[in-house]
Every structure is written in structure tokens, then in C-alpha cells.
Amino acid sequence: MPTMRPARSPAKSPGDGPDIVVAALSARALAAAARRAGHRPAAIDLFADLDTRRLADPCLRLPSEALRLESALLRDALARAELRGLPLVYGAGFEDDPALLARVAEDRPLMGNRPEVVARVKDPFRFAAALDRLGIPHPPVAPALDGSPGVHLRKRIGGSGGAHVTAATEVQAKPGWYVQRRVAGHALSVLFLADGDRAVIVGLSRQWTAPIAASPYRYGGAAGPWRSPERWTRTLPAMIGRLTAAFELVGLNSADFLVTGSAIHLLEINPRPGATLDVFDRPPMPPLLGLHLDACGGRLPEQLPVLLGCRAALVFYADVPTRIEAGRLWPAWTADRPAAPTMIGRDEPVCTVFGEGPSATAARRHAERRQRELAALAAMEMQ
Image (cartoon, rainbow, N blue to C red; front, side, top):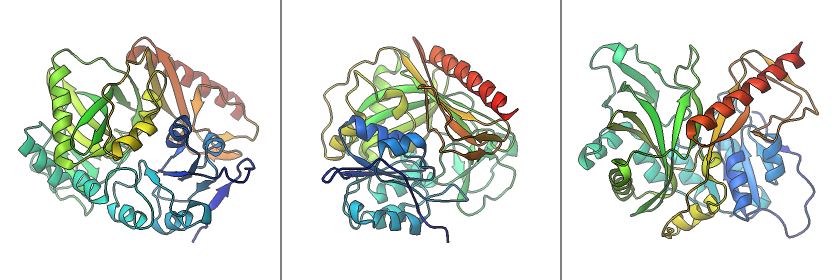
């Protein structure tokens, strides 16, 4: 079995050890949010990128061939002396294994939704039944095709990032998978704070895919804040409030919708902080991780400030195998910078690219221009 690999971190003085642990498939955004909120994070993820190492001490990498958090390795990491009993904030990577969250919570505070809440939200059939009771529109789900394969998608239960979503071609879904009727529209995500009964919306973001043949719905990025139509100013907060109370959600969560004209369909709830931390965790917004911890304790802000301008966070995937050499200089508008030397395979993520603009569309276009610039530089280095 591979061993856990601690990444090198700057030397620390006595008494300035970590006061919180962040863990996710990629923990950099959580570590940055923890720093902005005045915490000293330790980080556990699959990559230990350069910027995560600068933000977190210790920064622990858990090797994984399947890009999944391995239970034994994660529990070994949390058992380190300096991490014992510290509060844990978790991100993407736990939704498919609520039992792992329950084991982790046995010896430390879990700052987020309870394992049983995650289990209810990520069970597609229980979730759909609850939405029916709440009167919230959603695409029908089933364990097997109930119509033409061309109008259904196959999804992994508890999957994240969109790479697992493909067209459904088999009549019966395999264990751990389900089918969902395809709905046309553009993707909208709502980031919100919840205290188990009430909710406050942080912001809306437009999201997009970065499709390839094997993963036509692979996550591409997000931009926001997106200004919603006037007709949603009451209905959307009311909907988020009903979801919060029904599932007893706490902390930062996001709800993913598909929008077609005036129709809106809820696809899923991500019951933890996610990728849009990069979009919304900036002045004049108060530190979002601090608000997350407060909300987990039952405290919600009365109101939140309006962000000026928009930001996009785009995932830059390698079109061809790309070697990252030691000493490479990364622009300030990048994040998730891989430790070097390393080889990035075709269609694997290289880094995150940020863009700014007066609208979500303009911010996305700015990030896409920067992505092309970075890709051109990478191609020159490979020659």
C-alpha cells in the first residue's frame, strides 16, 4: 500500500501549529479560505500543490490511482499527533462515503453537515422524493432506463466534478450508479449559508463544462456573481430555505440548477464548501470560512455585502501530455500549481485560471484568454 507523503512546508515556531484541518480531493481553496478567516490550517488532499503547501502546515498528500480519498490513508493522516482532535472542514470527495465522515467525526468536531445529512442529500432517490414533497422541480431519476437512452444520463451516486456523467446506454444502472432524465438549459449554482433551519444566499454563479469524448459533462469552471432575473428574487431564496429546513443543512452548501427560459430544475445539492469559494471569497465579502463555522454553530449574518465586479475560476486541462519543470514561474492569476517536476497527462487538470470582468460572461472570457496564453507557453516549453 502506498504511504502518505508529507509535503515540505516552511519551518514553524513553537505554538503556531495548526488549529483546523481542511480535507478534500483538492484542499487549496479551503486552505486559502481558512487563512483569510485567520486560521492556521493543516491540509489533506490528493495533490499537495505548491500553493497549498504555502497555505497549510502540514500539507499531506494521499496517493490515489482512482482520484478518491482512501479511508485508511485519510485516517492515518488525521491520527498524526499535531492533528488529533482538531476541527475538520471537508470539501469535495466525501459525498460517496458518508460512513467515512462518521468515522472521522468520532474523535473530532466535524464542521459541516452531519454524515446522515450527507447520506440523505446524496441518495438520488430519497432526494428526488423529498423534492417532490417540497414542490421543487427536478429531472426524474431511476435505477434503470424508462425510455429512450438518448434522453437519459448515467451518474455515479455521490460523484462530483461532472467527469462521471455520461449518456445512459445500459438498461439497468450498475450498483452505485443511477440514471437521470436529461434536461436542456444552462448551469446555475447557488452558494448559500444555512443554520439547519434558515438560509442566506451568498451568490449565484454561471457554470460551464469542458467536454471531451469520455467525459462530455466534465466541470469547466464558474463565474459570478451572476445577477438573477427579478422574478427569482423571492422564489429562489424561498426554495433554498425549504431545502435547508427539509434536510437540516448547515454551513456553506451549493445547489446546482439547470435553467431554461423561466423554468428552473434542481439537479443536486453539494452539502459542503465547493469550487465557488474562488469566486465569492474576496472583499468586501467577509471571510466565507468564518461564516461557514458560524453557520455550523447556528449563527447566520443578517445580510451580506454586494461584490463589485465578477470573477471566473476556470480549470485548465492539458490538451497534450505536459511536463512541468522545477522552477517554473506561475502567473499570479493561477492557483492549484502542481509541484515539479511532474508530468501532466492529456485531459488532466494543470491548474486553475482566474479572470475578472464587469459581468460573469466577461470574467469567463478573460479567464479563457489567460488559459490560451498559458497553453501557448506550455507548448513552447515542450518543444
